[in-house]
Length: 102
Image (cartoon, rainbow, N blue to C red; front, side, top):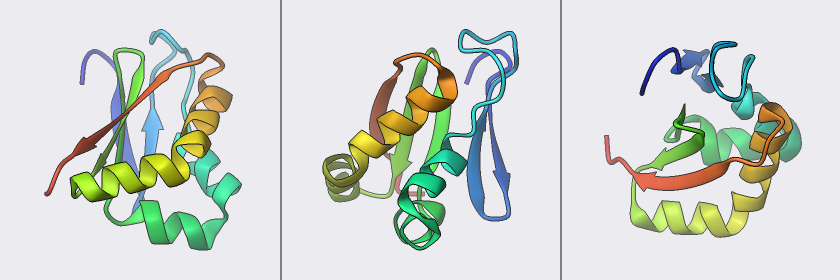
């Protein structure tokens, strides 16, 4: 990550934040917004434990354990992730799914 952009983990939940100096300005709470949209049970099942959300260079990187998870979650939740990002960032931003087995 670059500059002031960072990932904050609170209570097992990933919360994406960026300082007011970032290109989208203010705090991003994509994880919380996504949890509101999906409901706590679905969010916990599909995102809380093995998903990392990182905002950098104007896009959100969603890291998951395998290519299967990336493809399946993009097909099933991609629209929800993009909507949550747009709602929090106030701009249309790019979502990138990546594989991180750790």
